[in-house]
Length: 432
Ligand code: UD1
Image (cartoon, rainbow, N blue to C red; front, side, top):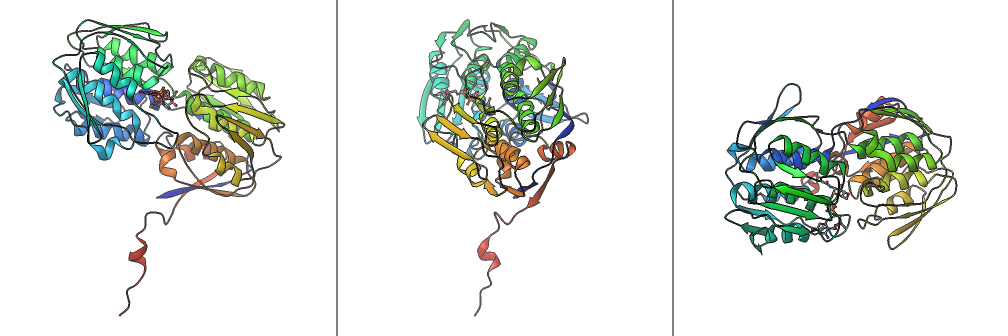
C-alpha cells in the first residue's frame, strides 16, 4: 500500500496532457468483445487500475487482449467462451456490470455479481435489469448474482426511469445484436455515451440519436473489429483545472475536447479564473484568491457530479460562502476529511455550505471515493505544510500517473509506501 505526501503551497505552472476517458474506455473495451470478426485496436486507453480490472474480467471470460508497443489495446472478441463473471474482480468496480450486456448479446446467458454498496451511497442496477428483462431475458437474482438467459434478445421500447449513464450504455451494448429495433427513452447524453455509439457504429451497429434523450438501435447480425481512439477524459481535465485554480496557477491543459467542459469552464470563470480556450486545449490563469460560487450538479451538459468534490476543495479557501447542491449521488462523506484540514463546511442533506477560510492546513487524510481523493489532493496542494493522503489505491482507479503529472506542473508530491496491509502479528515476536 502507498500514500501520497504533498508539501502544499506551490503555484502550479506549465503544461499537462490529458489521458483517454476512463468512463469511455470501460464500456468500449467491453463492447469491443461483441466483434466476432477481426480484432479491435483501441488507442488512448488510460492505464488506470479500473481499466486493468475490466481487462482481467474480459480475459477471465475467454477474451484475448494485449497491449502493443505503442500502448494500443488489442481485443479479440471471437474467443469469448464463458458467461460467469468472477466476483473477486467484479466487486472492485460497478462498471463491470457492462459485461452483462455483452454476455446476453453474445452468449444468451450471463451470470454477473450485483455490484455491492459503495462509498457514494446506494447505486443499484435495477434500471439495467429491467431493461434486459424487457428485451426478453429471464432473470433471477441468486446468491448475489444476476443470472439471465435468453434465446436471443428482442428489441423493445424502454423508458429509463432516471437519466443513467450506465443503463444507457449497457442496454446499447445489449441491443446491438438483438432481433429488431430497440428504442431507449430518457437516455443519458454524456459524451461517453456518444463515444460508445460512434465506436459501435464503426463496428457495424445501427445506432441513431446518441447524445439526445432518445436512442434507436436496429439490431444487426454481427459486428467486426475496428481501430478506434477513445475521447479525452473531461473529468481528469477538470481535476487539473481546479488544481491550477486553487494554487493561483497558470496551466495549459492539452488534448481535450473543449465542448465537453462547457459547464466546468463557465463555473471556474465565475470563480474569477481567466480561461483562454484553444481548439484542443485550455489555459487556466487563476487569481491569488478564488471567489465563492454556488453550484448544482446535473446530468450532462450540466455540471458533472464527478467534479463536485474537486470544486468544493477549491471553495474551502475562496472568498465568501458557496452553496453546493449534489443531485446525483450521496457524495459528501469526504467533507469530514476536508474539515480535518481546517475547512468550514456544513452539510444539510444534499447541500453543502462552504465558508471560505484564508488557508487550509496539511493533515493526514483518508480517501473515501475516487473523486473525493482528487479533492483531497487539490486541497493538499494549497494547504500549509504536509498533507498525507491514505487510500491511494482508490485514486489509482481513475487517474493515470497523477503524481507525475502534478510534479511536472511544479507540485511537491510523492508516493510513499505505508505500513497498511502488513500482518501485525507477524511483526510481534512469540516468547516462550
Ligand atoms: C457513471 C460514471 C460516474 C458518474 C455517473 C453520473 C462510469 C463508469 N461512471 O456512473 O463516474 O458519476 O455516471 O454521471 O461511467 N440509478 C439507479 N438504478 C440504476 C442505475 C442508476 O437508481 O439501475 C441511479 C444512481 O443511483 C444515480 C443515478 O441513477 O443516483 C445516476 O447513475 P448512473 O448515471 O447510472 O451512474 P453510473 O453509470 O453508475
